[in-house]
Length: 166
Image 1 (cartoon, rainbow, N blue to C red):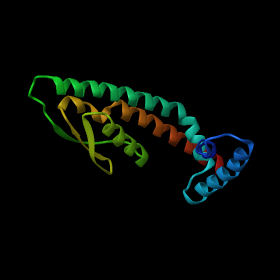
Image 2 (spheres, rainbow, N blue to C red):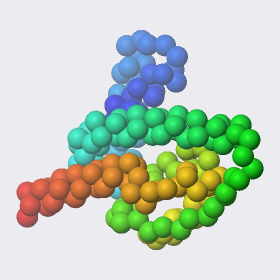
Image 3 (tube, one colour):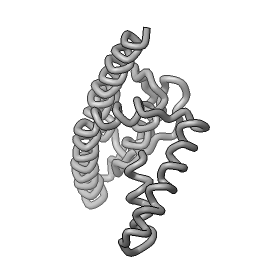
Image 4 (cartoon, helix red, strand yellow):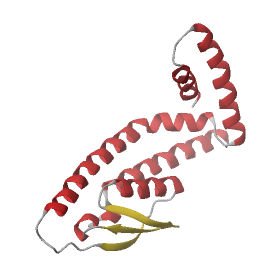
């Protein structure tokens, strides 16, 4: 997070000088301290994000691929001459444990064309789709599988940290 603050400071300044870098180091440190103290962030969170970075990048690539595939399906559906478009509302329950994972899943579903998450409450998601084919297997989609892996990694890392501090 500290590095992100520092890079953001340099980018928003529009130029790079040693004075800007020195001032940015101080400003980024103050912001990082604020985030740690008042928003529950920690160095352990930074380390966890760094460990998960390859999985996060893989998730983003899969999301982009799924968006492209859904675009093709939606275009094919819109340009087809069949008048049998079957919009549907699907309700399903997910076994994801963290609120962050559930929100990421809901947003990923909404970002893919032809589907939109209407409601996320507890473990239940309500999704509207332009056609039944667009939501087949949504409860066990690639998004859910990847988010489960990231949650398992979170839990394993946190368990290790708890064992070290006891």
